Length: 388
Image (cartoon, rainbow, N blue to C red; front, side, top):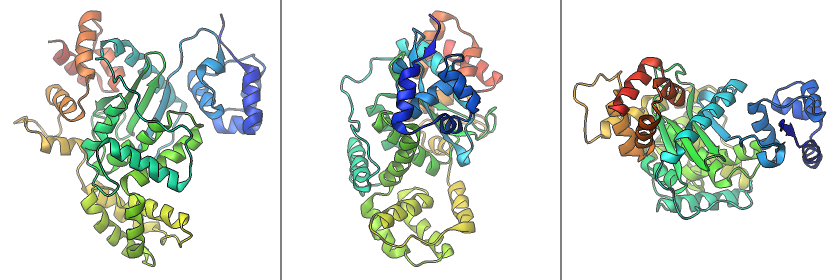
């Protein structure tokens, strides 16, 4: 059977959500002509556009497409410095999803219980605070406790998400391009989270919290709502209302330079970005009808420098390691140390699963190169380590 859109349902969803052809083309970054071709049944969306169309219209793949083509994965990115997403990013993510599905059967059994998700996600401030408190509770943290990076890893595992630590650093073909990538695959019924070990630790904490915001909505919302919810959730998770209320009393009325100094002082013991505090306090102020904090403007540069002076995630893990790899070049991450750090601090089963998969299928290093998005020489070294 040729794959085709469920055109009547698509048009019904467009009417319900108030989309016309022009608005849909703008949101999907395609021409109005292409949308017309889709709705006339003369053309079929590319995989990345199909995924985004389903998210935009809140239609699962099984309703969106009339055919027996395998289900498409749901993907979510956390790009560095708000870099723009392109169709190439979505196509690459869907390819990774297919590769991950191949090793899914080699993973250990997942959790027996379904973790808590939100039935009717809301942008209401009080609702998001309750959601943040709920998720903090999964790591046995109160609303005023420090969130350590290990707490975030613990929460990831509660939701049965498989961590995929990667080293997208100075030797990568995608140098500093992304903090991470979350993939939910309906084929294998597995969820995966790529974690860039080269991220600054303060950024890492925020984007993991952001992705958890996506996870607890279980992608029941359209893409824009889900993204906005996740952003507010991350602020509230790392700097909840109780903290924001106290901080507002210290920060209100300060100029931008003074704000940066005070926010850094507040951020230091919590090991979070001062900008997270800025956003959380402004959300608190908006909820309570208070004046917003002074705009940061060029003072934001000082916050950026503060974040970059802190260690990257890989630097933190190496310094915390109880099994230092003596003689290792600081600019070189050996496969042995890479796998050790990934398994020790992220408790990921992916490398054990890969060892079994590679042994049974005789897949080459090209598989690892595509899966981890690394250079050929890195893939060759990792393949040798996993198969010998």
